[in-house]
Image 1 (spheres, helix red, strand yellow):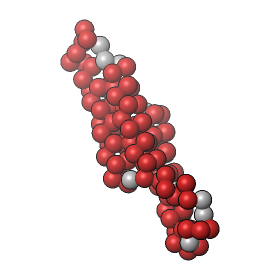
Image 2 (cartoon, rainbow, N blue to C red):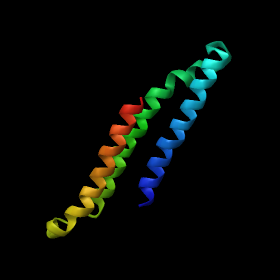
Image 3 (spheres, rainbow, N blue to C red):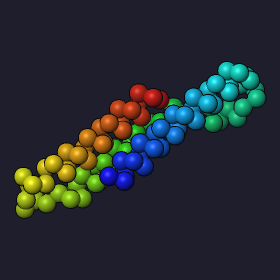
Image 4 (cartoon, rainbow, N blue to C red):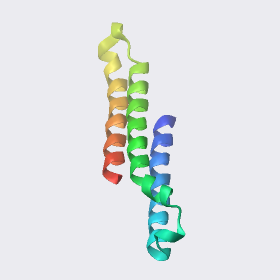
Length: 94
């Protein structure tokens, strides 16, 4: 699904940026970078993880039909899988 690619792209992009910025802090020192950006790296990972949680739950529930519960469970579980994976990665990387 496209929403999964967007969320995973955000996590991957922010990971690459965080590695680059951390290396830049290590190479040039804290005085040569914007401290606000460096300090916000962990909280952005958490925010992306929570965003992925809500987006995954939303897309899982969007196709849920209470009249056809058995047929609706696979799409619900797929959305919940995305929700949990993005939460785990977001918290782990922060």
